[in-house]
Length: 199
View (cartoon, helix red, strand yellow):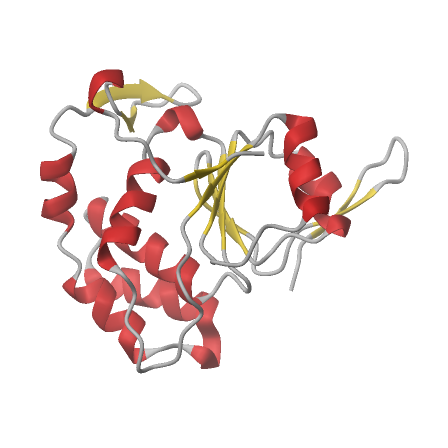
């Protein structure tokens, strides 16, 4: 269910993508954005989108991104059933893009914003030192009745220390609205090139 906001000045109705939510300052998650959601996405001032499906991005959406100078990072994770596991290396690469504040504000999405998006956010939460029960509760809140045991096992077994070792050159920055919130940024010389879909 999407969030609907109405602007008083010109009566524009803003409709969020399905399953939309703020993960934290500068990071959002949702299902696949439709053209009816573009006005809402404009309000987020996005710099990047992390797209977790293998299918090509629709031309209409690409045109929207081009016109706003938004970068698309595509990590093609197959839609899956209980028998197929999430590729760990792909999640690692997506996390490297996600925690780089130069890509913020960023929207993470797959088709419905439940499983693939839930796994990436779950691994981010482990990296942020959330306790596992809170990570699982957040995943289940978005997945609902479609919660998958394989996703939960993947999140539980994900070794966030491996990501920390990969990012030995992280610079900690303090940003935010007057808060001492710790944010992460790669140093330029060690930033590996992610798989980027040029638009």
